[in-house]
Image 1 (cartoon, rainbow, N blue to C red):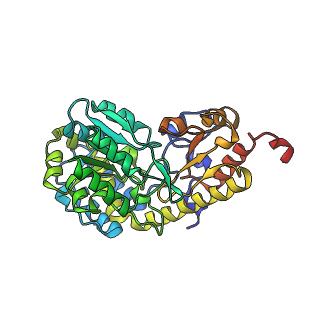
Image 2 (cartoon, helix red, strand yellow; image 1 turned 90 degrees about the vertical axis):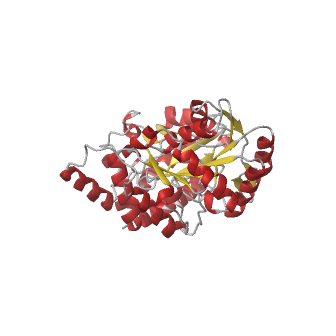
Image 3 (tube, rainbow, N blue to C red; image 1 turned 60 degrees about the vertical axis):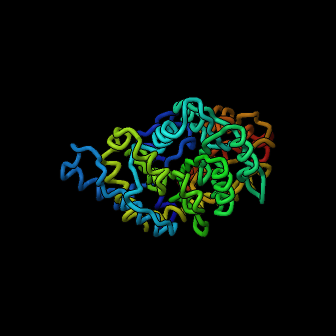
Length: 389
């Protein structure tokens, strides 16, 4: 299947009612939110149709749901990660999992390390949990923005208790290596801390890139690490509401067992059905999506080199989000404002991610022609663009 048949055209996608397609006027191309413009994976479609025909809509999700075993099988096949189904706890979404987990392991006012530029809602989620965010920015190393292990160590020494890890990293698309994460685990172990690892984009790790789940990198990581997973990004089902909390030690299992019962019972029945189908039977579909997303990421690099050569962009290693530094264009600290007003493209506002002045985040989970049009619109904002046409 070629990319043009995998991704919906803009006209097809505009028939959808999600906020991506309803937040802006029809002349704006929306690339601001993480949502794929694709048809539903056939195994998910089949499972949901069967549930509707059966009338499997009246019950609540229970602890015996097959989603746990489905995820365990997926983790083994894709990451060689041995997960016991009994170590998987379902909930509504990863954001809820973050808040409820932090509430369980931290006292009021506890300090949580994050690494900007990072998923913007992390700050709000930490505050919602009654905790305080501590910023340890990523650092330039080996041609990418990487974790500042020394800075994280210093933050823990200064009183932080939890590191909220974004892995793969949003918005940069970096997949942290097993070596980096093992070094991180040694730091956290030394301070008797915790790692809550948001691994929601892991199913979309690009071909040829190795994704190491945090609890798998060392015995210490297994002891203090809580991994959060979902099919929502990889299989484009966030609206169905199901996420998974993976705990693999007595210490972390106690956290999961101590969560309020409603954290589990509020899991959507349809979300659990769809996620089970995705993790059990969606491999072939996911393989095509990963390859198509990778091609879109490479396409963006080619188009920027041609039309915006001063833009700084590193091809992501996972996911369909692109972090682009437009500081050299001198469009201000938040270029997204001008891009929306004059270019009629909605993109992620770099400053909201922290350490993101002059940057934007683009969603590349769309038709390749959309990416071409967007880069042309960006290029049209450069001085003298009209004369170069």
